[in-house]
Length: 119
Length: 107
Image (cartoon, rainbow over all chains, first blue to last red; front, side, top):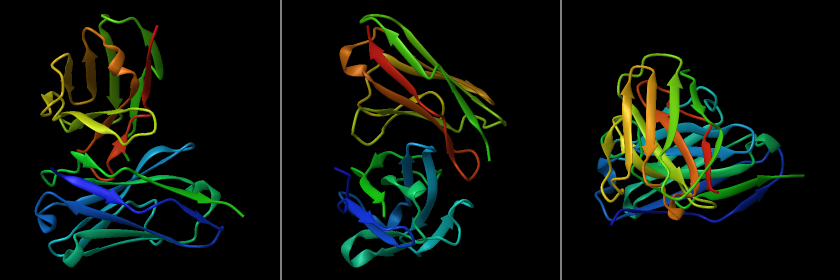
């Protein structure tokens, strides 16, 4: 079965960066887009962007452009999301999710990674 | 960005009731609309895609309808296991955008 397993919770100081991983299993990794979505108390669910592991193509949401980088490593079926310039507004749960048909909706989600930004 | 206005924001109903949640888009999204259920502390789970297509394993008491800007999720015969927050997602245009959520509990 499709499974996405994310890295553990992080605590960061303002101005720092965070890198979250998402390891996929149960399907052909390179063939499906992986998206990143975050859930914060202030903004609810926000789409951050996506990566197509087959060719590493990325698309980022305008709100995160310049601060987010998504990469992939097919040898370990893992995608990564790095967010820089953290502020307290970035505190929330970050999810990876699989796109089943390249249409930008999500059929499987990771368990979420809590990122806390605090001085 | 397309704004998705979801209502109500919260709702309390009894076991066996029929529950209706709506999402209205600020622009035409065709049928590019999906619905998700999120239980407390868990990741969202897809219920419906393409406005009305029930995903595999989702109970038939869930149904979706709508087109263009107005969409509806109906839960018929509400069960205790349906306690959750429900979100809509438009995926017609990037950035994809979510409704604010409807928190459903049992009376």
